[in-house]
Image (cartoon, rainbow, N blue to C red):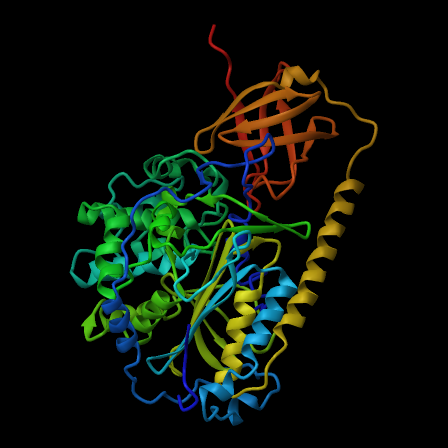
Length: 580
């Protein structure tokens, strides 16, 4: 644990909105396989593979480098929206000591974790180049009662995206990549459903979520596909908006961005991140795959909360989508990474990326639609692998990440030279703790009155639960009673194919239909006519809603529409006729 001594100097629903893009694709998973689970590539334990270990001398070097003071902070940016209370941002004065600012913080964090059933949390804070807090709370392993420390490794999910952008920035600085040249200059085989997007998509477009594609995460999540196979299938994914017309969070384009770096250098993404970012920054315990974690000797186990019950789950192997979200790290090493971006791309006297590209990452590139219901959070845009907004009148750069059993929050205030990283080992039902803790720390260090973000999130949770209950009632009200399927259930059985999503098998099991693909089983319950409701628990499958079978002109069951993409049309699978 590191603490400073006494003399050291849109919507805010904490992932309900800020991280809802992440949670949609990474909150499922069970520790054991069963007929309702969607497993894909999971690790019940990280594979035994020696990881790089940090030598004691390097420990000292990192802390020493982080302790170097930056120039005095610039005047805080005052946004258009008032803070709450309205005059606090203008009149606040920084606390005399860090100890004064952090008085009662431990109790606050412990109580907030208990409220949201978070087993373990790690928190790191840097100000003016000095690590003023780096510690752990709770347990990385509940059964063994092993505590979280500042070096406990956890998955950071989509906070990996800015690492991929940093890698591209390094290549741009070396003259190997142009942000605004077509992607096909680097990937001649890059092809999307839309010909115009195929021809005009640039590396900048790949990492700013303006491809025109909705998420389409179910074509890779929990599936047994390689990155090359996923890349080849991009051409079959239909957009729901025109190119560059709408912000839509997109993991697949970040995978393609990583592929650009691989083609340019002839090295895989994992090796590039290790050589070009981890090694120069001394991030020796950080890894790019869960299979490398066991060698650290201090890694957290993942837990998921469903129906109020906390369960240990398996590690999710994110390797096929690695450039979008496979990095694992700890708060000490993430503070090194944050400081590098706070300091314009320089760490310990060595330039990692140019000042121009560092600034570009932290500048708005594409507006994120919508406004926060909270005045303390200003309008948000997406930079390059980072979000750009404001907190209580102060410019804030941030991102979040979710992988089965882990939620993280990374943020910094550039003008105030303050950065915060919070890692937790619980996903599933709403987990706003990382964001609550980060905001509370900013309130304290900025000398502002503390906003009760916990109470606000409890209110938002209640609203979410009410909306979910209303949706269930609406679904039941739309159901036409007294109908039957137009065929015997056995007639629906067979294999159905989609060029991007692959082959699904429909079969009868225990008098009901089910859909099976890879390790996933979707139990179906008759809804009305030829429409069936997915009856599997949301905690074990990444899809809910209604499945509809359609017939051809001869009356034969010819296709099935499955709601794999919640932000677009259902994905239609055509029946595969057996060869005669």
